[in-house]
Amino acid sequence: MDWIYSVDDPLIQTVGGCIAIFILIIIITRLIGLRSFAKFTVYDFAITVAIGSIISSTLTSSTSVAHGFVAIAGLLVLTYIFSALQRKSGSLNSLISNKPLLLMQGPEILHANLRTARIHENQLIAKLREANVLNFNQVIAVVLETTGDISVLHRSTTKDDEFEERILQGVSDKGRD
Image 1 (cartoon, rainbow, N blue to C red):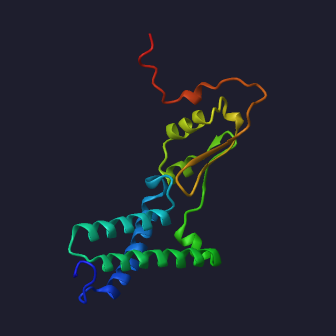
Image 2 (image 1 turned 45 degrees about the vertical axis):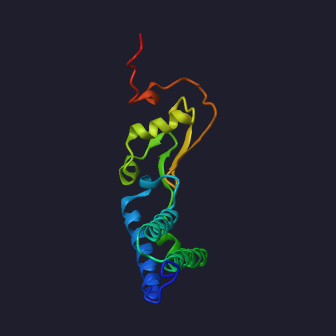
Image 3 (image 1 turned 120 degrees about the vertical axis):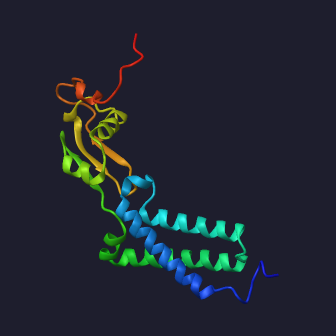
């Protein structure tokens, strides 16, 4: 019955390890940046990786099910506590979560912010094409969201409604006859 529960299971150390791993994953992910894990907040990514690792260890090593359960329960309780603290403390929220970053304001590309986010101008322009922007004057703002997504806020038409060739910047025309 050692695979279910063992008196030798270091349950207290496991809970301490959960806290340490959770915090380390958040710190490392904040340093790497938003674009590393699109669609995930830093917080979501940390908990997903940690739980996946615990499940893997439980299934593939001599770790008991009880030990794995305590580790996952510890992480989920930690997640609950952190989310409650984030709602109450703006400073903790800003420490853990990234803020959205403005990449374009109107037709102006904010190159310093592109560098900060490690996004190439061609990637930004590709997002404009995806949003069916025909002219830079249609753009109100482009934002790198906390999930790593890029949101394009634009008008549906402009005064001159003329297609701007720069929108095709970086697009290959190979294969044309």
